[in-house]
Length: 325
Image (cartoon, rainbow, N blue to C red; front, side):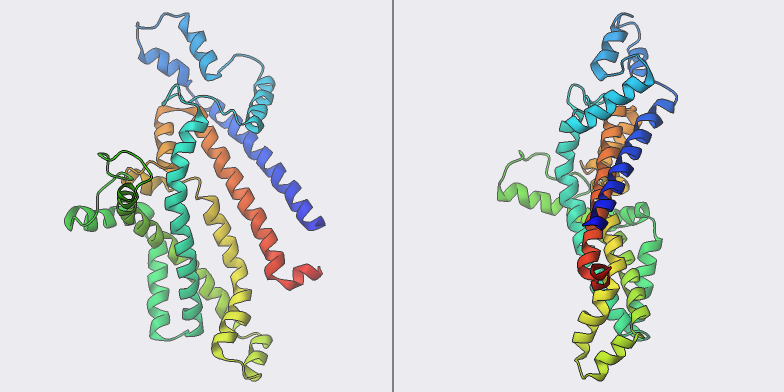
């Protein structure tokens, strides 16, 4: 408990530090979104409406420390302000709508990639030097080396434009009304195939390479030799002796991947025009929608820290040595 409490204090401090950077960074950038909105309106808005716009979006003049304390208070009360691009919707509503799509797409892709990549890494390490190992290793390294934007465009061009097997964008058929029905669910699944294939291609290579390297480093340990000498089956030694210990660094990679889920895959979502958090963040950056940008970065930070805290707990469960320590 002392170990977990220390880690909890560390992660809370890290979140406050990230929130502080999140507050000051946009204010150091040149330009003011309210001033941009006012200037783009030309002569249609009277000068006295400038202050009203600032009050509406929370850009109140005052000491910086006072704005900072107000900002911290709004974080813990869940009031992230109103979006500038999607006015008058609140930031929580804009991000909440996109959250469902991102969790469904990125969450499924991460789980599938972790399970398949870990399994392939275990088999490649156990059969190291074989043709299977060469094919899997080369394929995994190639998949991790290709940028996500290139993979997205290749998959979209081949299966979307050339073959025409799958739709080229959107999360569902725009002609259908969102509802809990088999028709709409089928449309969502059909439109999500290409983004899912792209994300799995990008993610699976990293899990495979990490698990393979960890397994190879452990196969020469004394306890592996002892397990084989005891007459245990190869499957038992591979899974319960080697893979279990090699899984610890891979769990850290999974935590990083989970932390990026709520950030969305900006490139993939923009290429496929998928209405997730990554696409929302891209649109907010173009519109200088500071409230949405700050809210999105806070969600990403909090998710990353929570995922790492869960990994710390998992380490204690997976590694008996930490329990004794």
